[in-house]
Image (cartoon, rainbow, N blue to C red):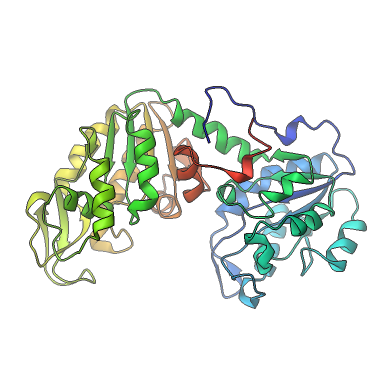
Length: 395
């Protein structure tokens, strides 16, 4: 999908009279749940402004979401009871819960709704038709409401029935969260310079479209995490004890360029689990019996220089195994650098669950300009890939 310099978002704020209207809101409440309780409500909190906006305008609100990947089957541990409980507490308002998405129960619940009531439907991925983007299933969902609102940016790159096909059957609008996501991402597509992209994490195949799309715009692309192995292999340097598949090496080789910066050093361990002998090793001379788990001090200093001069910063993916005490320093250093440079001196945008988690750990998430709720969706949007969930919303 080509992103034009000027774009129009069909926002729910453009609908003048919402009183008494049944509004089907596609949310992304796929959050971590343990022992029947939500342990991270970030995505739920981000959707509250849309729900509250609709409540203030006396709409009837029907919420639909997925939770994890139950494979088109009803799985008890993925039922939405814990989501309903947390949402009710956050809103200070009762949220009804229907153990169905389509059929008599859902239809009856929608039919008897009063203004300012909220109904949460069951996990939409319990139905195999959802991930098949089944039009008949989408039509049944649409039959519950008068309007459709997409506030699930994190799912908008997927051709699923409750995100894509449903737009054929109801007037479709962006929720407040989705609108903000698109507005902030446009600032990365039209960056102020210097523009610095920081790419970490594990899967190079998910990062290649992003790097390919932005490297011509970026003044520097800083590589970290497991991605670094692929780039080292592409330059025919040692990757220690880690083997790089030919396909990954080929992808990395295509991405090499003057503005693509690789680590100068790594914190390595002699054992695969991160134990054994720890040392700082030069990136161009990794010992054959070592595993790299973090960027080293020389790399942190070098990357800091780029971040401190940046006017636009995009960061996705950790620099190493940040969940382990010995290997958290590089990622945390980058987190602090990005947060300190953001909100004034530069526009800082981050995305991906692990990236956001690190910023939380250092208590600096609030200082970045925007933390996207969609890791994969953010990468897809910035890379110019198709976004089925935005077809009738982004003009």
